[in-house]
Length: 122
Image (tube, rainbow, N blue to C red; front, side):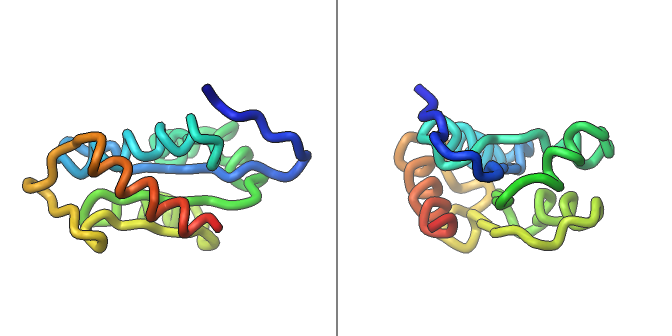
């Protein structure tokens, strides 16, 4: 269950890589877990890349942005930057030991990534 925010502060938006590799799945599922935990709200990275006006405006109004990338290609980070967003926290799963092609999308790996993301959002 999503924990509702009792404040009027701007939301934390979470954008994740959702690529075809194992680490893309872990990044995506981590963003979904963080949303369920009330750490922020997952938003649509494709909307940023496609310059969808509603997604861009929502992101401009965000209090905080977290980008989660599965691998060193950093597609989430680069997509945000191409759209003009420069103030964000960034988690690259490769940097916490989750390697592309060698990381099982499991409860353990998703919880590991979510714990690191929560540290970044403190």
